[in-house]
Length: 71
Image 1 (spheres, rainbow, N blue to C red):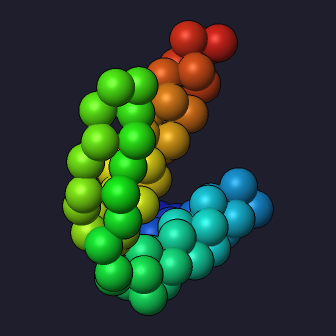
Image 2: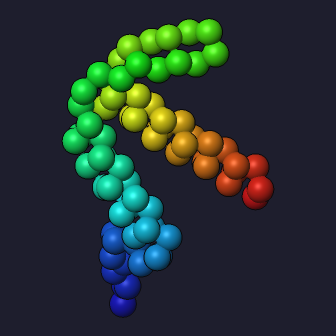
Image 3: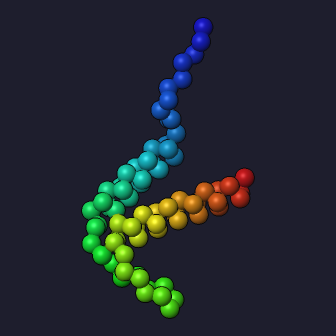
C-alpha cells in the first residue's frame, strides 16, 4: 500500500508566508505611480511598483540568508 502525499504543505508557516506574499503582490500592483528615492547622495526616480518589488525581494533574500546561517 502506497501512501499518497498531498502537494499542499500543512505547515502554518507556509500558509502565513503565502498570505504575506499575496498581500505584498496586491500592494505592489496597486501602487503604480512614480516615486523619488533618495539614498545617500543619489536621487533616483522610478515606478513605485519596481521599488516595492525590489524591497520585497531584498527582504526575502535577507530572511533566507539569516535562516540559512542559523542552521
